[in-house]
Length: 412
Ligand SMILES: Nc1nc2c(c(=O)[nH]1)N[C@H]1C(S)=C(S)[C@@H](COP(=O)(O)O)O[C@H]1N2
Ligand SMILES: [Mo]
Image (cartoon, rainbow, N blue to C red; front, side, top):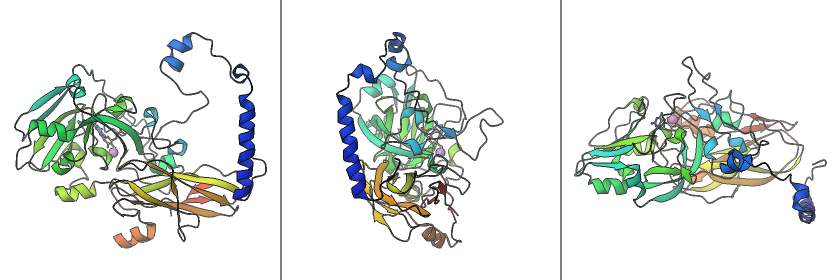
């Protein structure tokens, strides 16, 4: 825009003008607008046979900023999803964040030979092939996953750096409760231990109550089989719990009567099932993805402040946005369905007056729990302002807009 309109009415008038232009273009013959794809190989190669994105779209994942990557062993550990480019609430499978304790090693598992065993404190230990699992009743649900390591730091530049260890997908699979009922959970059982098939096994202890509630044994992701990086051919989904519980390459579920220490349990030693159910749950969280660090506003005028909100405690109820560093808050619009434990898109129309300001968002979930301000976090932990807690961090992310329109991370 050469001369950005400064009020909403001006913007709307301009939009009407744009709609007029779009209608005019429709009258032009299609072949004048697009170069015809006449190359036969496009139909059998990537572009059509397995659709690739346009070469003009270049958004991609990057390694987490804290870890030089590949590391001394040649491994790439966690890679962050480009949230700044996300449209809507579903993360494309190719851009879904990856967190693996085994670095760049992604196991290549043949679904014909893969098995899922359910055993331990059950009446009937069971072993399923993939074909058998796919004959069972299944459900499809939208859920986010977030790594406990998704913690913004002052040194981070973009929203991909600060919040890129969360993604959201549509998952398809068998409710775990159905499999556990089929196996017959014995009285006295209180936990399950779920284990992956690769070297480090990615095992975690999960309270039985959660296992019988809403967990999924998933084989589908965004309308196709899981990608290898996301656990092909099978993964456990523990909606709302932090990432480490979402066991990839799932091969074994043992029903037990206590919490078991596993490879994954360093730093996650919570052996009270009630406490675990709460502390391993991701708190209500949100982040503005536009305007966000590294982006720039093209002069004053009307913009859509847009972002993502989510909570491990249920659906997002409201998102508020502040354009004055947290002094006042306005309720944003929810621009997508607010599914339980799913990314939810919010937006707020805003006129930037060209002056320096700080943008923030905060989410309240269906339980009425609200994302804390930095001051609330400091007070709760009895620490100085700017303190970021260990473990899952859901404090508010501030972005500073400089008077030249450039956007900066404003964590103190
Ligand atoms: N088998 C296995 N499952 C695993 C892991 C792993 O290394 N191996 N990493 C865990 C961690 S720490 C996270 S945050 C999530 C990440 O899931 P994603 O890679 O699909 O994003 O998977 C979890 N499940
Ligand atoms: Mo993680």
